[in-house]
Length: 314
Image (cartoon, rainbow, N blue to C red; front, side):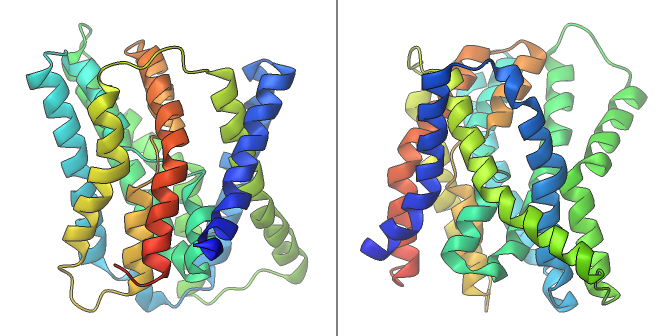
């Protein structure tokens, strides 16, 4: 257990430092804009490219793994959406945000550093591949379901064009594709470029985790909505359980891939859940509460999961 705490403490320590800094200084959220740009468009793409470009090409051809992980996330989304829409009587747009709160984990900021720290650089491959598929799915679901539930109908051509643009211009997805191509053609960047990529990769995790803490501090938990009584357990407990049960049906699946995928499923709700809610003006304050509360509780659930996985209890 001490080994796991030693692993988790520096990572969550950065989030806590960010939170304390955010509460202390109260700098407006506009101050995070350039830091977020650096993380999303420069540092994390460099990390993904570095990891994937050095990976044997054969590891990318694991279609059943990707289909299974996608299915696990879809099930968690559908369950959360169904409870909100049918059992709780929410409208389609509100139920969509609730679906994301129960299924869309922080696989961008928290996923890569935690998986790599726990399971080694080999975890970067499944993390990057799952990120691409899951984000593409979310880019499709969000505008489609919001258009279905909204009063204003968006032209199908405009909707499809917007979805395709989001998918193929996302820096993480572009970096992943570039890394796969570099691995396929066995391309190695020149030494100065490689040094730069390494520096950016090393900066990705601390910057991302610190920003997570600051963001939580600037969006304090004002109240706990009743919906979080099922959405938070869905995200932190049920989603990873579904993922584990599905993936263990794949024969000879690499243990690191299994553990990494379940870890991603166990992550707290992503900040993007609040961003999507804010974009459409739906369930905004409660989406923010879902992100903050699930992130706080994940300190305990993720520590437990890492203890079970790294000690061979799964």
